[in-house]
Image (cartoon, rainbow, N blue to C red; front, side, top):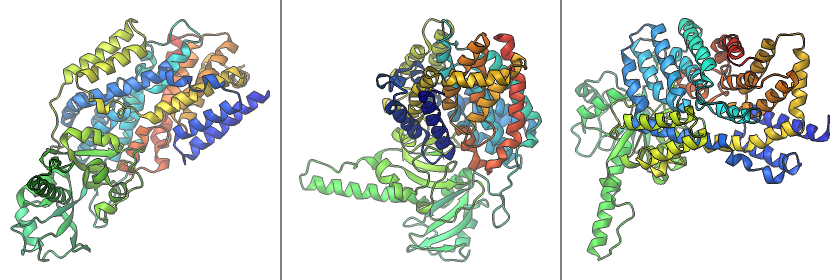
Length: 614
């Protein structure tokens, strides 16, 4: 083994170790690896940052903007509203939800599609008297399967299409992935629907024996000045509201919290009640009692103070008004959002992040599966998967959620939404796909054109363009591409390929394809799937040269293996996103994920060899 090969393998070993350790963000690790590879000379200095202009990187960024346009237009939301009519049979619910998420994930960002269907899944589970855990893991796995349907379904497909250009006249096309993608998606969805009982059950009981559902929020309500319940008991308040699904967990008075207060406690002006309820019961409770959301009440007081300052300034002849004096007149919207694993909120509190001061957002309520929250809202440390009820200016709501790393969930009647432009968004998106499918434009050019059209017609506001792009993914791919090239140029990929050839000398070609796919699949369960694709693609190309065969089936095996990370919650963001709401543990995923992974290999390999013979 030559010195440059030793260096590239050492860099990759340390990089993979840091990915698995998961202490640092994967984009930071990838940048560090690129820097080391450049300083040691295995990546030429002039090529160190060529990855930023790679068509795969541009395509991924454009797909994320297109996905934001589809989300803003309500394309997925319109589909989600019809799913509440599928009945209560578990197999039908799993089949319908998993299938529709898989379909959406083939054409848009799978994490965004998953987040929009999650509240539908939870509602269906609640209506059927089951734990949401039986639907959420199938939902996540469906989003991964669906990503294999098209070129733009998942970043590994875009990356592999780019590598195919090195060994063929053209990259893979928009629907070249469809034969194998459709086969494993249909097989996987049917498998999950028939064997949904393999999904771990997480019946999370609260201390009082009641089932804590994800739609049980911890919310702070304030008795406003002049409330008719001042001087009356808590029992009278609850009786008057007629809402039996509202549980008062604490009362805060003069900065002192009393847990589970007596129902005969006399209420005073300014008292804050910590209540646990779902969003629909909360709305009905507020309508009947005229209590106010605590953050909303504080916001009104700030608006009155700003108005007084403006009036005082005008009286004194000062032409300048306070900077935010008009904030109180702006219409505020309520929305439900989920905290993503990459959100800046994770591990912090609303006070620590100064959300109100820096982002103009109020956290009105928090829901967390499997745990009863007893802290004040300002003291709760957010975790990935938490569901937040947030309030912000209507014209800034989407941008605000992007800023803090949260994904909006489907509306439950609390949110004021803009008029839907489903047909316009769908037409622009379809036009981009058609240009790629007909070969009229390269994928990167067509996708950028579609993204720009979304911006020009107002489906993606200019302020959301770059916020729609997950820069950690972009940096990861851009940094790993030169390292993947170094693996090829130093002969490292050939060494790995020779080892695979020696292993499969006495085995049929199908076994070699299966071994390659299984190895990449295992790798993608511990590192980001885009990184797995970048590292495995040069090996697949070298392996095809050693076998004197076409690279297409081996590259397709890498694409499928990189996209099917079903064994751990860290293999893909979709898996991570459902972990907390579903109450899953780290070891729960393999129970459904292992047989599903085996099924994918058994279905994919014959289809690959049928469509792309070795």
